Length: 277
Image (cartoon, rainbow, N blue to C red; front, side):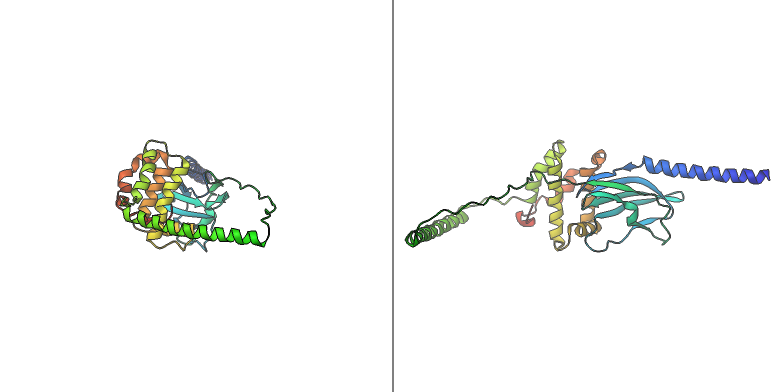
């Protein structure tokens, strides 16, 4: 009887110790549980109980959150994960709902992974002024309208003639070299190295490179969220995205990124390699 009681007590103590270990591991993970719309965030070294997990397939193109498991490592009877998520709209989300087990078993024992995403207006965006109705000026009679129309027609003809000549002269004399994508990126990169790159400029740098890859891989017809998923799976664009995420969104890991090596493939790109910035 005493032996059975000791065995039962030891089993309960072992279970309690395992639960405390898992809870401590989850709390001590390097979490980024707060982000803004369109800005990827990371949750590193989070330990989740049970067999290995994977991300559910995305259904449609209107998913509010896109998540990716960067790495997964065995951790006793559990697994330790590095996760990146990116939200398209503000709110609170449970990343657990985006996961499933590879062996098809239940995920009821997986704890909630709550994140909060805040809305951010683009820099410089202002509310437009309300339009006010005003009365049209009185031009006079039919004869005045004819005079005004004739003057406008003559001025338009002269403008076409002289502007056309100026454009031809400009085409014949302009020998300046178009700016390459590297020229556009260099001020942003130098500011980032000096620690003077604000969030707006960081977003501009990331947007330029993502736009280049979307055009190169012919992903412009996809939504932003679907295009990002495709880019992260590409053998060339995927490493670029991971390096950008570390450099722009993980300041404590910036020393792991060689900025010069990261940008070297874009030094000799022509100016039309990026249609819009």
